[in-house]
Image (cartoon, rainbow over all chains, first blue to last red):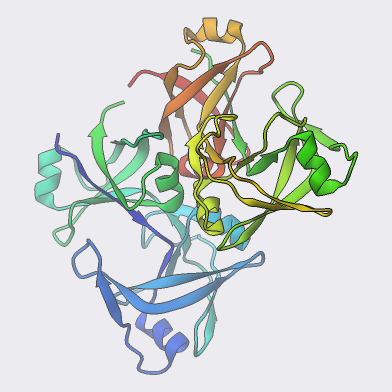
Length: 190
Length: 190
C-alpha cells in the first residue's frame, strides 16, 4: 500500500474570532503567513503565551478562526506548564482542562480546550476507499526511521472532502520515532 | 509471553569520580537517595545544570561514578537546550556532541557524551533464554495504554548478570505511548 506523509504538529492554538479580538484588539483579523497541508488552514503571524502554574510557552495561532478555543500541546509541554492535557481529537474538548492565554491586548482564562492531539490521518473519501478504511476507524501506522522505527496504534482516520492525505503527530511522538520535519507512514495490521 | 516492566528514564547524568570532584569539590562522594531497578544503580541527591545555547535544564546525577561522563536527555530537551543529542546506547559516546555542565563548585565543557538513549530492555541471561532473545538483538515491544498504544521498534536487548528485567524509554517515548510512571511491554513480531 502506498505510504503517506507524516507531519509534525508543534504546539499551536485555535481561537474564535471573539477571542482573537479580546487578545489582539477589536476588529483584529488573523494574519496568514504560511499555508498548511490541510486546504484552507494556515499558520498566522500572531502568537500567544500559554501560562501555567509551572511555566510559560509561546505558541503560534493557526487560522482561520474556529467555533471554539483550543490549545494543542505535547504531554512534555503540558508537564512543563504544570497543566493537564487530555488526549483528544480536535474539537472534542468537553471535560478537558483549560489554561491562561496572554496576548498583546488582553488575556483570557480558558475553562476548557487544552489537549494533546490524538494522532490521526487526514484523508479524502477517495483515499479512504484506496486504503480500505472509514472515518473514525482506529488503525496502526508504521513509520520508519534510522534509529527509532515504530508503529503508532490508536491512530484515528479522519475523512473529509476538505482534507489532504497526511498523518499528524505531535513533537513527543515525532521524537519517539526519531523523525525531523516529516516522515512516511504505512497502515499495517498487528 | 510474560509482559515486563517498562520504566521511564527522565533526563539524567553519569559522571566519572574526577568530574564529580571538579563540580562538587575535592574528595566529594555522590550521595545515594534512591535505589533504581537496575541492581547497584541509584539516584543521587546531587543535581547539575545542563547549559546549551538556547536554554538550561537541571538534571539529577545517577550513581555510582562511571568511567565516562554521559548526559542523557530526550530529543525535546535537546531542542530546548539548542543542542544535538544523537540516539545511542549508553557508553557508546564516540562521535557525539557535548554540553556544558555547571555544579556548585565548578563547571565543565564536555567534548562528548550528550545522547538520547536508544530504547532497550535490560534482562538477565535467564530472562533472555525465557524470551528467546540474545544480547544486542533488536526487537519490537508493544506497550498498551488507554489512548496511545504503540509498538516500539529498534529496541535493543541488553543481557547482563547484573541486570533486572525492565525496558527503559525516555520521556518523549513515554508521552508518545501515553504512560505515566510505568507500563508493561511485550516482545512481538511485526
